[in-house]
Structure formats: structure tokens, C-alpha cells
Length: 261
Image 1 (cartoon, helix red, strand yellow):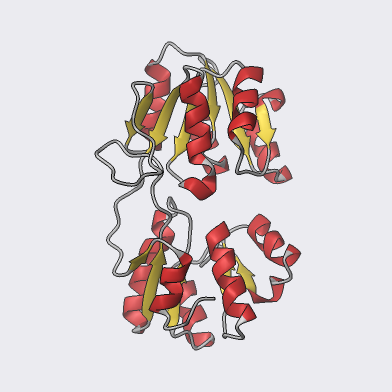
Image 2: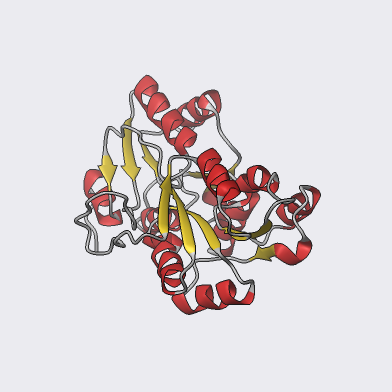
């Protein structure tokens, strides 16, 4: 299950080694990326519930399920754990390390929390924080699925959204009341300099983000906001018990009993 950059790298390495592998992604955009790197034949697109995932495992004689879904695709991970247990197959979770924490953190790459960084438990709390804030220009960088909840603030705040360049999502944002001039349809991750330029260009006062890790460009995003005196609202990851968890691709291959090059 690999709708992430690391997931694609795992699939590519397995394919290069001649291992039997099939992968799933939730969106057409994710499938297009696989097609561009020449691995479209290994990719199945669609959101799978427990029944769908069970059928996929049985039909393909799957022995190991590698869960390399996004850190915030909680339900997908819960389904994967449940189905792996029911089918009696091995489960391995690849989890991106956190890049920002609201508690003591020993990770050298973690960003120390300044007063301008605010942690909330979920999307609803993020919306409420922004609603109560006296800041007006808010940049949402948490993906298309989050836009609907923030669109409720469009009459009180200037809502800017940074989403993937998918025409269907852009059209839906407009239908939800987001001004077309406030939609930044771009593929990340983005550099520190690029974030600074965007924040400056649109006079951003609040950035809403998930803790998607270094691969998701979160450190650069938060650092730019800190330097510019912009508030950052960080939506924390949902706590899930993973039977097996790896924080690097090499660890995944070690769990598979495969040597890394």
C-alpha cells in the first residue's frame, strides 16, 4: 500500500530485484506517477475497504503486506492491520519519522517548538483555532480532503489552499467557495525559499499543516513560517498501535529478510 514517495521506492526496489509485488494507491494521481516511472502494471488504483483488501490478498496469494500509506491515512492502516491478522499474513508498517513535536524530542531533525507553532489533535480543532484567531489570511497545506471543513470560514477569513494539480479537485474547491485566485495547485515538496516566496506573495498569516515528515517538506514549511513571524497550526498524527513499525526503507527490507545494496 504505497501512495507515498517512500512506498514507490520500496515497490521499485522490490521490482528491480525480481520479487513478486503488487501495489495499491487511492487516487488516479498516484497511479499516474507509477505509470510515469514505468511501474503502472504493478499498480491498482482505488480506495479499498476491508473486504476489498481481503480479496486482493487472497487473489494474489499475498504473504506480506507493507503499509507505506501516508501518516494521516489512519483508516487505511487500521484496515491493513485488521486484514493482515484475519488472513494470517505478515504486516510491516513503514512510518515517516516525525519532523516536529509538541513534547521532548530526541530526533536531531525535529524542530524545537517556538510560541508561533500551535498543536491541535484533529482537523476540527484546527478549523476552530483559525476561527478564533484574529489572523485573516490562512494557507491550508493539508490536502484537498481538508478543504471542505475550512471552506466554512470563507466568509470570515481569506482561505488559500495548496493542493495537488488535479483538475477535479480544483473544480471542487471553486464549488466549495474558494476563490480561484486563492488556489495554489502545485506538486511538492517545496524548498525553504519557495515557501518564503509564497507566504510573502499572499501575505499569509497562518499556515495549517500536518506532521507529514521530512519527505513531505514540513521542516522547510515550518521554518519559513517561524522566520517570517507566521503562526503555524500543526495537526498531530492519530495514535495507532502498529504490530511492526520501520522508520527507514532499509529496515523494511531487513524485516523482509532481503539484503539492501
